[in-house]
Image 1 (cartoon, rainbow, N blue to C red):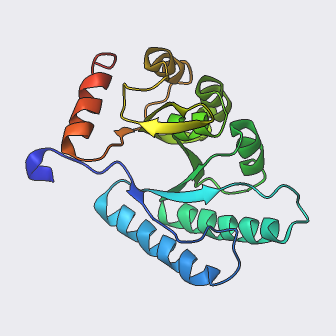
Image 2: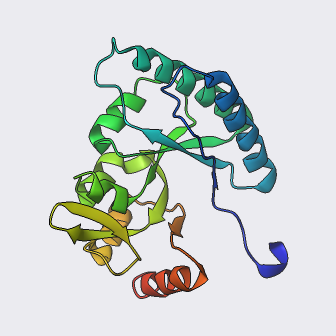
Length: 200
């Protein structure tokens, strides 16, 4: 990668079940911790994990499981210098308020405007709500694909106003990665070319 002047922005750790499911949780946490060690060795020091949704109530059994898992990962991140970015679809202000409960510094949020639009959230308001909790961003678009459903589409082919969204990034002084998602080299290259219209 260095010979091609490339670097890794983050490592995604896929999970079959979220950290809110108690069954076989420890092996999943061990997998995330191992991925964090790899992220340290490879340089990005950032691991993105799928998060699903927050428990609705604090007395929900999943709430205690989720809290225990995130405390474990956050403390491990504080010790190793690797940050966890949660990739979910909760209302951003609710997610930020939830993360404020943790006395660890290694928990943040991965911002994906397409997922937020599909979940019914405003991506521009989301940037302002997440603010310094936003530590990585995916560039993906979304639009209505049927009368009753929104769906992800190639970057630049959706309803998201990227010029305004990038201005929102400037407002919160976001300086992290903006990673284009796509199926195949051609789609990713087209997405990069689209973004370069707005980003120096």
